Image (cartoon, rainbow, N blue to C red; front, side):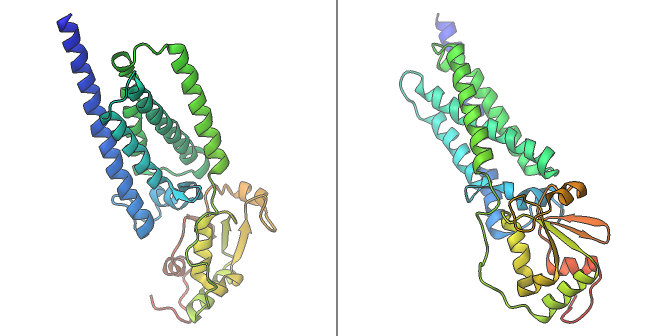
Length: 286
C-alpha cells in the first residue's frame, strides 16, 4: 500500500511538473506574440511576408476585438494557476481539464483555419498548438490520479459540450472588423497619390473584406488616394462585393494584392508596393 501511495504521489508530481513547465512556456510565447501584435513588429525566424505575417495579419488573429495572443496568455496562465491551487473533491483536476480542453480545441480550430482558410502556416502558432496538446494529454492522463471517481461517461459528455461551445462560439464571434488604427481621414501626399495612380494604371488589385481590420490599415496607408486603387470586396455582405471573383482567384486571406500576375498576402508598406510595381514617380524617395 505504501509503495502504491508513493508511486501515485510520484505520478502526480510528474504530471504537475509537465503542466507547470509547458503552461509557463505557453505564457512566455503568448506574451511575445502579444508584444509583436501591438508593436507591429516581425517575428524572429520569420521572413517578411511569410506565413507568420499572413496569419498574424489575417482577421482571424482577433476574437471579439481581442488578439488571439492575449487570449493565449489568459489560457496558459489559467492552466498554470489551476495546477498550483488545490480545490476539494477533484475540482482542481476538473478546472485544469476544462481549461486545457478548451485550449486544445481552440488551437485545433486555429490550425484548421491556417491550413484550409488562410492558406498559410505560422511557426509560432504551431509551436503553441503543440504546447497545448502536451498540456491536454498530461491533464487527461492525470485523471486517474487526481479525479478517479469521475466516470468516463460524464467526462466524455462534458468534453463534447466544451468542444461544441468553443467551436461554435469561435465561428460565431471571430471577425475581422474589430480593430482600426487611426480612424481619421488622412490627407494624401504626393507620394501616396503618385503610387495609387501608378497602381491603377498597372491594373493592380487589392482584394479584401469590409470586416478586415488589416484591410482598413492598408487603405489608411494611402489616405484619400486609395480611391485610385482598384479594390475588390470579397465578403458577400460588403458593398459592391464580388466573392465569386475572389473564389476564382483563390483569395483566402485579406488583404491580398495582385500585381503583374503575382499575389502578395498581408499588409504591404507603400515602399514595398513601389518596389513591386516599379514606381519611381513623384514623391518617391527609395
